[in-house]
Length: 47
Image (cartoon, rainbow, N blue to C red):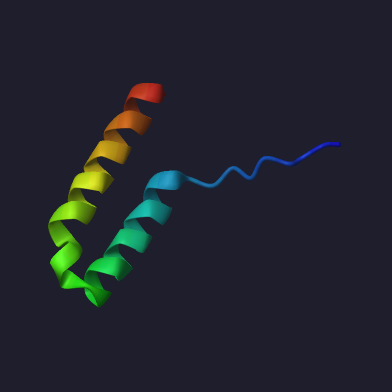
């Protein structure tokens, strides 16, 4: 069973999702920015 791997850049998708969540729930700003920075840092170290 072959499962195709979709090559989608994660950082732009993550940025869009976090941006939309910040617009909907501004109180989450600090947490979402922290999660984004951690995710970008981990992805940067993996490459």
